[in-house]
Image 1 (spheres, helix red, strand yellow):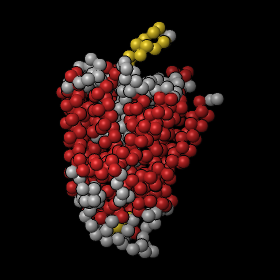
Image 2 (image 1 turned 135 degrees about the vertical axis):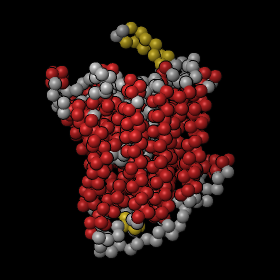
Image 3 (image 1 turned 30 degrees about the vertical axis):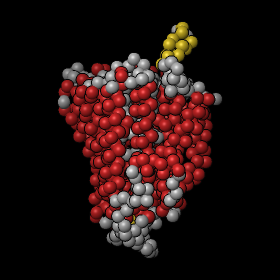
Image 4 (image 1 turned 135 degrees about the horizontal axis):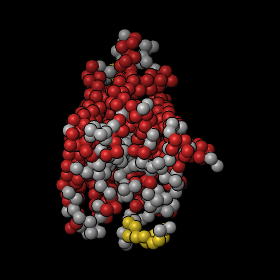
Length: 561
């Protein structure tokens, strides 16, 4: 079977799995977020935390709760990394240096999982399992909790109450993330992923003789790494490593895991607002972007000028032989259109347009389907912008799901859209202006006078695009483990995660206070192919106008050279 047919069959199998999961998982998440019943375990936890599960919060209180658990998470994870040499099961690993520990703590708490270190040579079991893995659960669940408040903003009226953060978080972790991770960890173990604590080294028989390789509790962390769109791997090779991703089948399962919640959330949205057609409209735009990006990147990885590429019939550098081009671009498209950042191939080795596609996917705001929760709230804000533009075109006050989109709502939407690009471009500009920091660029991508080539600039632009959008993947040619890069990167990740959340929750609060507006003949039909097309155009137009100049200096300049 040719690679093309194998790739098409894998895409078909993935689409089938996602389609089968869409309704039951979406309905189940809606049930989690709306039911009034609490389990016994949850009641014990609420009592222990001193939380009244029946007390709804305003958007400001909800936001402070998000900030509180995130701040505690950063401090605790930083402490664990700094004292890990004194913890049990440290495996002889030294404590992590201060700036790298700060970067790592910010990275995992923000659901970015950017790694300026090699996991198998840096962290012991306790740091991996009680530090990083815990944040994989919490940070992913925070994203779903935040989008739940935005949906409640549409469904509630004349109130300032949007739910209880601690109830939402507890339910998402214990009813969704934990049980699903256990099931898929068992599947990964059965398919060959490693999982053991008796010894961190396993003797493996290779063509070069017996080698002692780090193994550890890989499968259990791989499951939540993908399901929660986290992306941080135990191994430096991430999902290209055979201990994390042994076969083509596990590769398919991992791609499914990183997409399934994001693609099921539109069903949750439709069920909560009382119109499944609204969910299908959002889903269709997500699917079109995903399919289009996959087709684009696959084409440019298999068709490109150059003697080496023509001889190999594809851009094979940086690709795992077990997966080939189709499975690599499928993984790359899915991981950069979500906030996962896991990789099974090196994005730095992609062709200029292929690597540019990965960058552009993140610049879209990772909305197709995006990270757990963050993708849907990003798409809903763009839907609000779309109905506002449509309202201007016909000269009437725009409405979305029975709520008027007034100047206040548009201010929050505009701030959301502008925040992440501002973080990306400001930090990338600083890195390029500080000559000492361009030394982190691969020397092969520097000109004779030390100035970066287009690919060198792409490495910097990709890094801050990834960090500010809480993705975590990288162009591997950039050496990020320096004082400046660790500090600047941590700030970019924190700003990119929490500043947009402020605008989302403020928007939710503003919508919830409104009285629903009855639908009339002049109301724009937002559950229609026309609106889906308008929304798609808005997504591409907003991103194109924002990032096109920067892309012209990087991947576009390199690809057209």
